[in-house]
Length: 265
Image (cartoon, rainbow, N blue to C red):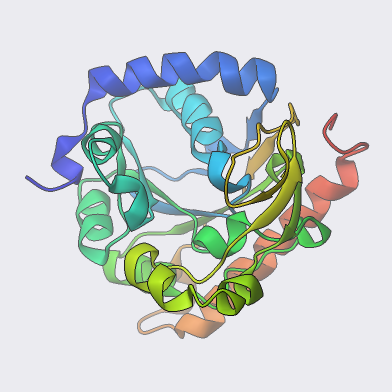
């Protein structure tokens, strides 16, 4: 049985119900523009925030299911390391699947909406000084996935999640200094050692994990990009990636202009 086939509607409903008071009361979350999702399958591409305790998926999922119900599952592509141990089965049952091309293709072929954070760990631990900068670290696989599946790309941008604590550095230099890079790449597929400052532990180098502040999180879904209609057969991957990131940067800049205060929103 593939990761996609393990989706459990009942468990997903239960998890969403438990997540709703956290994202709606603690983070006062809003998801705007869900009506921009086209009928059928689509690949939603978003920036990623909040470090180890990111709530980006929960924020999106609560409003998505409240809007569209559970007849149209939402899948999210996740980093390999989060599936270690018994957590893997639980995540699969709630729609979080390993970020492989086969999984993405199968989920999209089923007609589902698939959410991907191309920047992954590189993005989620971006320094606070660059919290409103779209940067996927050169990763463009999401474009190829959308082209091969023949589905539209739907850009989405989120603000607020990176205000839960101070992100001082991704710590790639620290990983090299401690000679952990090869180990991290082999076992965790990363080469960073994030340095943050927050509550209640203060300075943290990956661990202990600080509790995110109750920052207001706003996500906005932008207009879809219908690749075949707009670019024909065999579009250039790098050009499409630049277009998506450009639209997302414009959308994030607009959210930032409307945000009056950090954390409060």
